[in-house]
Image (cartoon, rainbow, N blue to C red):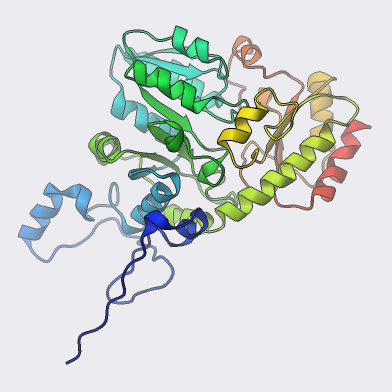
Length: 401
C-alpha cells in the first residue's frame, strides 16, 4: 500500500498580514478535512479512556476539555489574532471589557497601582475606579500625549500602564515606544488597547507594549454582529497568568462568536484601508464646514500628533470626531437630521455610525472628568464605514446649514 504524500505547512512567520488574516490558525478535522473553519458548538469533549481524561485535565492548556476554557473554534481565532499582532499567544473573552478585566485580575492584586490615560472609553474608567478600586487597587489618570506625566505618576507599587491609541473619541496618539521605556523602568506591565487601529494599521507589541487588548466587537468583526474581546502577549503572561484565570472565572468567548470573528479577520486589511481613506476624506471636508470648531483625525496635518501617528500607524484610522460651535444643541441637530448614518454608540462597522459621546459612551463619567479629557457637549464622533464618501457628505451637509 502506498503511503499518502504529506504537504509541508507554510512558514507563517514569513507571510504577509493579508495572508495571515485568511490562513493563520486554521485547524481541520482528520475525518472531513473541511476547507472553511468548523464551528464546534459543544460544551465538552470526550476521551477514549479514563487515563486519557486524567491526562487531559492535567494538561488543560494543551487539548480540549470543556468550552469554558478550551474550544477548537475559539483556539483558531486566538491563534490567528496572535499571528496578526505578532504575539506568542492569545486568550479570547466574552467582550472587550471582560478582556480588560481579565488582564487586570490576572496581573494585579490588592495594594497595586495603575497608571491609565484619561482618554479611554468611559466604561474603562468605571472599571478601574469603581470596580478595581473596591479591591484596594488605585489608579492615577494622566494626559495620554504627555510622556512626562506618565513618568511623574510612577509609584513604588505601580504594576500596570494602560492606554488606548488612538484614543476614544478624540483620536489622541500616544508615543508607544517612549511610554514603554518608562513602563519597563518601573517594572510595570504595559497594555495597549489596539481597538481603533487593529494589527492592520498598528503593531503595539513591535513598538514595546507587553500586552494588546481588543474589543473584537469592533473592527475585528467589522459588521456589527457579535460581541467579544481578546488579550495578546507573551506565552508566559497569556498562558501562565491569563489562562488560569479564564479557566476558573469563565469570561468565555462562545464558539459561534469566534467563528464570526474568523470570517471578519479575512477582510480586515481591506476594510481598514478603505475605511481609513474614507475617514480622512470626510475629515478634510469637515474642516471646511461652517459651524465646525475643530476636527480630530490622525491623518490631518492639523492633528497635534500627526507626525507621530504617521510613524507608528499605516493609516489614520476610521474614526473622525469634531466639535460644533453650537454645543449640545448643534450636535443633536446634526445627528437627528441624518438619514444614512446609524445613530448608535458602536463602531467598527461597515456601516457608518454617529454618536454624541458626552451623553452616550462617556455619560457615566463625571462632568469634571469629561472636561479634563476634552469631551465637550459639542463633540460628535463618526465611525466611518464603507459607503460612498459623497453620500456620507450629503447626509451630513444639512446639519451645517
